[in-house]
Image (cartoon, rainbow, N blue to C red; front, top):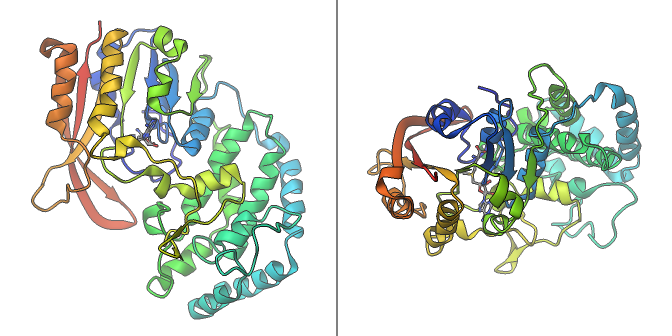
Length: 410
Ligand SMILES: C[S@@+](CC[C@H](N)C(=O)[O-])C[C@H]1O[C@@H](n2cnc3c(N)ncnc32)[C@H](O)[C@@H]1O
């Protein structure tokens, strides 16, 4: 099964692609267009790219960027522009404020000596917007958003200066299709290096309690990981396609108003959020690095939030118990009205005595009954597979039933 890994994504379907294909294939013809309407990391859309035209949509900006990169139809060759890219990168790096360049040398010494305590003390000296030692209103001449916001928390100082300098270099290619592959590779490098649980970015870890991990994460080199990932886009294993695939970045209900969707899509694959955890919280750093607009800091109860969030995160109604089922029904009704086949994914813990379910926003039975009352019982089928979600950085395993609700629209 074709796969291109970018993030440790909450609810990713990359490990059950076989199950999805086996059950969905009966709906597909050679000229089918599949819409992955809650695309996340585009793992499902990408797995169909070699055979079908794929559309992808997600309300999160970073997910749209990933879809643009993974579903692209053009051959990407970084080798040709690598030297030029690195020249831009180095230009930004050398223009960093003197105080950061000096403190970065101290950081390197601590890492060489495996001196976690020294590192923790050093981070107290680094000026950031959170300590008000750097003012957002007075940005320096170079790109320095991550250095001034996150160089003592999610990332190290050198890592942050590298993120900023890669981002500066990426902006030199904003009119080139490689732009999306570059941002996607930067997300991957950030995920690999971030000092937070499981590569999610909801909040940084406590340095005192995680000294070994602090050292191992900080020793990783963002620019090297970025370049290696970017080269994967031009490797033989990356799927290229002659189809005119498309990516959209909107609330799914707005997408359904587009004539292109109404006329050209034959099958909709829907993997909505099932819990009240907002994706914009878990992956906020990816939107920040993409927008790169020095956002305002979120203050709650007079203090900054643990996750050091910035303002204007998107809140999906699908992640609220009150609105979820009613909101999702719009997709069911649309699919029925426009004669689309609809495949809905849902995962729910097997052991409800021991595994928490309080954050789930929908019940599988309610979802099945909504689908079958719209499409008819004889046009609705439910298949399940047991799956153990595990994370190599996390000892806890989560056994779930993976459901697919298959609705035939023809
Ligand atoms: C379970 S994840 C999808 C995971 C994906 N199948 C994968 O393998 O990576 C659900 C996705 O729905 C998106 N989402 C939530 N509310 C949405 C809305 N109202 N419109 C469009 N996308 C939404 C989230 O940003 C998230 O990426």
